[in-house]
Length: 238
Image 1 (tube, helix red, strand yellow):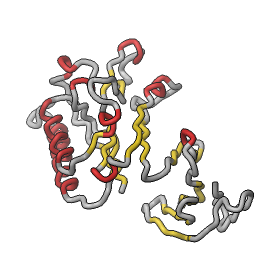
Image 2 (spheres, one colour; image 1 turned 180 degrees about the vertical axis):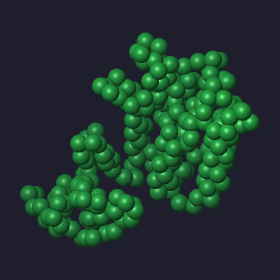
Image 3 (cartoon, one colour; image 1 turned 90 degrees about the horizontal axis):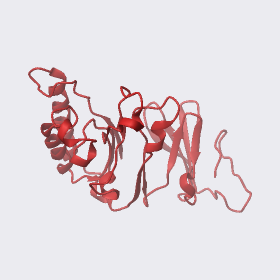
């Protein structure tokens, strides 16, 4: 199970009485905590949590203690959320504190490299079953220097439980970082087709609903060499 989450930013004043947005943020995290405690299946939750929990997750702990995203009350709320399902913070699991691990730099700075006032606002958490199968986690800080970049940078995690598939604006890329026997993926209209050579099946994923359907099984994908079964128009096995 994969859950992509955006936690509200919370406005600029860390006081729910003076700033309703801050209260909404804390309430959102509390609802997430109740949801998290009820989970019973292996899950990865990831996204922009808008909280940098550790002292080393910000450019200056002292200067940001009263700044929304690093206040003690937010950190305490996020800690309760993490404890509710024994989540493993993959970022700090593979890059222990106090190592540098920022994922966000404000657009307000004319030169992010000169000021380098980063924060770790984006996170990937794994439930205990998936945490044990996680093999790597990377933060691509260099992309913040690309032309017209986002103020956030990409995170990539790897697991022995599956293969990496990366979607980009130009299409679908497979075999990221040279992983063996990657899945083949293609998009046809509103459907994402995944050709899984390991499971010898083709899955159709409805992009609107997320519903997955096995539309072909028992395929001899990639065997014998040079044979491309092409069981459905637009599907290209790898």
